[in-house]
Image (cartoon, rainbow, N blue to C red):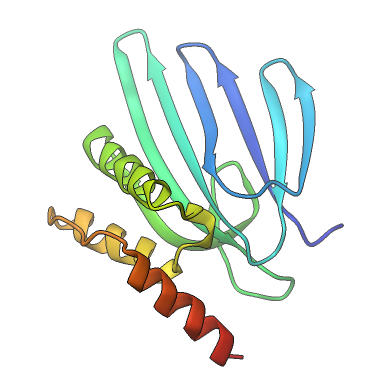
Length: 154
């Protein structure tokens, strides 16, 4: 299927570590023991965490929550993601990345797969953390509202 969004996942111990925090993988190809490529179906939501270091310590901590695009849709380019995706959340710096990971854990604690959460929730977390504010938690009632909205919207 050529309409999949492909993500390169790397693991070079203590140098570069990219991993998928959540998302439904449609296809996976192992390149070698340090690299693999995972693919997502159009419309699916996934989180990519990227970390890099050098001899002096961490140089980058980033998290992107993206929606895989359909053919012909506009998208933003993101490192390691081909062709790119709709950015729902994009933050860097370990304190912010850690808060996003905690927000993902909180959604999972409700028994909800983060890939099924309302995309607006990830926008909200991005916006609040970008300005140093505490985001509102995702709730079952917000999730139910999202599910109902999906049923009535084309």
